Structure formats: C-alpha cells, structure tokens
Length: 274
Length: 278
Image 1 (cartoon, each protein chain N blue to C red):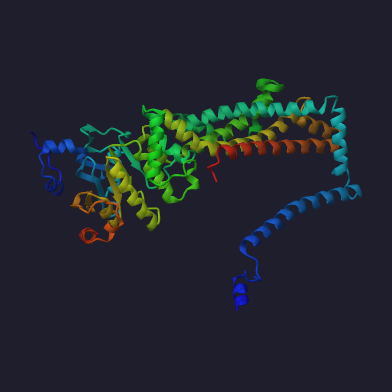
Image 2: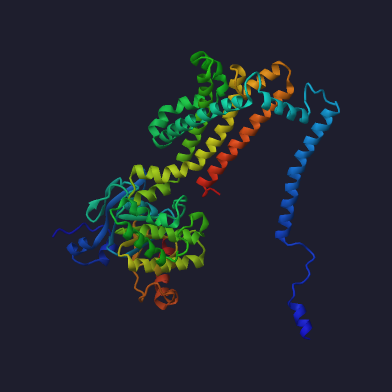
C-alpha cells in the first residue's frame, strides 16, 4: 500500500486510519493545489484537503483567504495551476452533475415555477416521469414549500428562494453539495430555520456537503468538521471535529455547553489569525 | 358602565385620512388631470380654428379633419380606397418587422453567445449603429429599384439592427450564476441556451422589438414619401403637395393610431410572456 502524500500536518493527524480505507471513503481530494488569477499572485499554494463521503465540512476563515476559490476549484469552475483535484479518484475537469452547487443568491431560473426549478436537473437524467414527480414532491414537503409549487421566484421571500435553490441541487442527489455562503443574505430567524432544514435534508440525502461561511455559530451548528483557513495562501490553520448530540438539527444544540465550547475554540483561533 | 365599554370598542372618529385613502385620492386626481388636459387642448384647437383665429391652411379644425376622414373613407384617396392605402402600409411594416425581428434575433443570439462571432462583427455593427437608416434610403432605391422591395428592405434593416443590439445585450446580461447552476445540474450547451440564456434575454428582446416597431413606422412614412402611389405616407405626401391640410392630418393621425395600437398589442404579449420582469 502506497501512502498517499501527507498534504497538511493538521489534516493527516486527524485521520490516522489506514490509507486504503481512507481512499475509499473519500469523495473529494485536493493535492498540492496552487491557484491564482495570475501566476504572480497566488491565492492558494500547496493546498491539500480531503472530504469524506457523507460528511458535513465547513470552511471558515477571514475574507480573501481562498474559501470560495477552493469551492470553485472543486466545482470545476476553475482549473488549478498545479496539483490536482479529484472526485472519487477521477480528476475534476469541469462542472458536473455529480457535484451540486448552491450559490449565495440570484441563481434560480426566474421564468420557471418552484416545481420546474426543482425538477430542472431531472431533464438530463434517465428517470421516469412518475419518479421525477415523486422526488420533487417529497423534497418540496421537506423544505416546507408546499402550496408554493406553482409560484415563481419573484413571488417568494429571500428565505423561500434559498430553500428552492437548496432543494434543486439536493433533489438530484449529488455526491457532494458545495454551498458558498448560501444563507448570508437572509435575516437571522430565517437563517436558523434554513440551517435546521439543511441538516434534516443532509440526513435524508446521503451526499457530503462542503459549506463556506463567515459565521462561527453557523459552522458549529452545521458541521461534522470545521477547517479554518489561514490568511495567507490558504493553508489550513486549524481543524476540529464537532460532536453534538443527535438529532443535530435540534435547536437546543445552539445553547448547549458543547456548542459554546466549540464556538469559543473557533473564536480564539479566528482571533489569532486576524 | 356597559355603554362606556361599548363606546370604547367603536372605531374612533379619525380626523385625518389614512395613507391608503390618500393614495387613492391622489391617483384619482392624477387620472382626471391626465384626461382633462388633452380634452382642453382639443377644445382650444377646435375653438381657435373654427373662429378663424388661426389660418386653416396651417391648422385645420378638428371637425374639418373628421369630415375629411369620413370623406376619404367613403370615396377613397386619389382614386384608391382608404382600406387599400392602410393595408398597403401595414403590410409593409408587418413583413419588414417580422423578417427583421427574425434576422435581428438570430444574429443577436449568435453574436451574444459566441464571442468569436461578436468579435468578427463588432466593427461593422459599431460603424452601422450611429448611421440613421434613412441615410441609406436613396442607396436602397438605387440598388433595389423604386418599388416595394426597397421600401420593405429599408424598414427591415432599421428594425433588425435594433432587435439585434438588444438581443446581444440581453444574452450578455444573463447572470453567470444561473448558467453555472444549470451546468452543475447536468445541462449541456444546447439546454443552457434554450432554458437559461434565451429566457434570460427575452425581456431585452421584447424591449428591442417594441423600439424597432415604432422606428419601423417612422421609416415606413419616410419611404412612402419618396415614392409610390399607395400607403398612408403617400396620402401625407400627396396632400401636402395640393395644400390639402385636412387630408394631411388624416394621414398623420392614422399613422399615430396604428403605431399606438401595434405597440399596445406587442406590450400586451410581452407582459404575458415575460411576466417575471416586474
């Protein structure tokens, strides 16, 4: 068994399982990735990250640290200058339906109803009309959009629109869902509701989630694992595993002792790099 | 005691109007102003011309124009029934606008979507854009003769250019997020074009079509002034030669009427099709 190159001291120390097992469990692997808009000004250098099958991983870090860049590289929107990004062992060459993306806003199709937006991904899949309808119906129930199926995005509130966006990406069951500050533009109460629904969806749909946020609370509440990126060239500054009691979506988790403990730890680490 | 309580639960007598009432009132006043002022203008027009304060050679009376219109409707103009003049003009606009829209739309979609096509035609469009289409009218007559073809072609050109420019702008204004979202949901290039880029460009396309249509009416009249013996533009031109100012106004008002009517129809269709645009 050849040992995969250890890419970051903090990440390898957390996963000390045998490498063969680890490789099988991995969805996404970034190895020695460098990226910049020009070769002279790199955003990422020698960056490594592994995402496990089904895990909820959050990237946290100061603005401009390369969080979104990493997400765009995994999505296939950007190509690394060097190193490689692999998905299930295959090199990522461009966007694919195996990797869903939820944008911060304004990515719904305004000319389609809620139902048509959510069912969009099925147009490109060999799937019976009946199953398609069933799955759209199920997810509409899950995210609380019942009664709005025939509405258009402009008739919905900001929170509802993001529900549609999440449902649209989730319903086709991607192996990983990439979310770039998806709840940044909605008010606090709505955001909390959206977070809880996202956790419920994550329980139902088995795929991994990579989440990018500024909010420490959001990171703790949602994630199985949080990675703090360093200010310079996107090194991994710190990484913690979050263990909160099931069900994870329980609102009580927000005020628990454990939650506070994780939040304090992340806060101090964030403070140290800013 | 009980009386006092029931009194309290009544709505108190407000002195001031609430905001909704104020708004309604204001709308009512604005509507009246919008109706009354044009009516006043018409009345002033009729009175001053009937009293002979304004020479009827320059401005005929309203009633005179109506009488002339009825006369033309009954007897025709220059030996041709009015309906033939009207249909002749409308047919030119309709044919030129339809073909022009298809041509402008196709070119616009290609130029908006493929940056190499856009680069190839960029200089040409930027050169043609500021030239008023009417500048080409005599050239078109030289190339295509004085008949129907040159008239339709000059109208077609003017409209197609406008539709094309608006289509390009519409295609290019499609947010990148929406395109990427479609791609991550498994859409290929054709699907992205059909389901994302084209619908995103539709509002711009309709704006272009409405501007093109009104410009087309202008070019129509100009082309009919120059040559021909049928059409509303011909009535205008012929009437002015014979100082038949009443018939001249009949022509002008008819062009206005059909311009407004066709824009109304297109606006109606546009609001139905691109309802998501406010």
